[in-house]
Length: 107
Image (cartoon, rainbow, N blue to C red; front, side, top):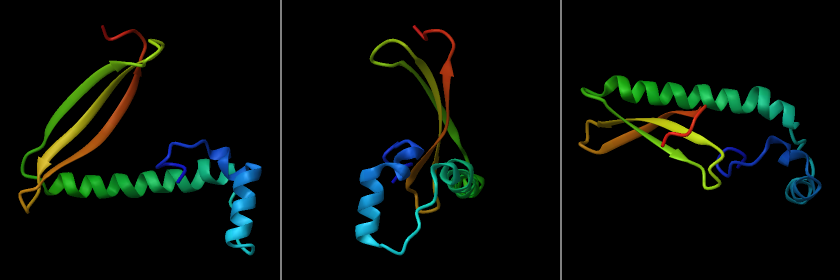
């Protein structure tokens, strides 16, 4: 939920969220925000990275695209890198590999 909904790690320490978890499962001890940021999310990152690496390694050819954009408020510019390939079932696949904050506007 934290990663999918792009929520801050401190969500797990918010009063409303802790109350919800106590109603759903009173015996469950929620990990701290620190545990999420130092253990759970980095472990998820390594797991997803390994899966993507395995899929890309199986691809015969890989193409890359990049995109640059500026945030709606024009305060931040970003550059992304995405890998694209066709899998063994002839299905188009892609993986978002990197996102960088640019020091200057891209336009």
